[in-house]
Length: 195
Image 1 (cartoon, one colour):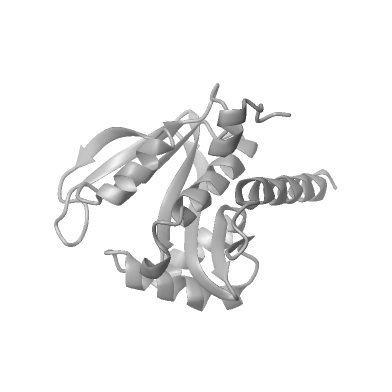
Image 2 (cartoon, one colour):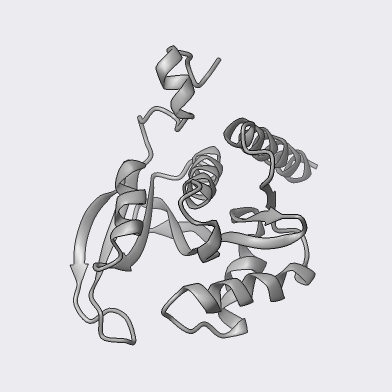
């Protein structure tokens, strides 16, 4: 009974986070993963936008185990952005991991990727994540800038990490004791994130 109640509370909290972070972007909607029927759109988007090939088993590993950490940006029923993550124990920490983030090229520079990352950071913080990590190509200046602006730091360089031989940076965000991520307009007006 408590597990069901906790899932409902998390779902309600996630919905309010999405609403808070996306209230000014009316043409794009952000939705949590809810059905295997969404998988072909997700896979198509990621296959077109990321350099690494993933099998259907990789997608299912993340989505089936952590469906509450997969969110999509939709434009009139079409998936135009997606973030896929997990949250589990790593040594003595509860570590979030951003496995995949992709936004269709024609939709970039509209803060869709930033919004997806903010949604998932807040979702992981609701589940008491200690830190969040990811890898990105060291040449991907757009991704490095996006994550840097959200407080991620470069943890280490991973040489020839990707199949194409390109190096990666592991980026890390420490979650404990930090101020929740809020919209820029809230920072300017001085409103507190907690009310």
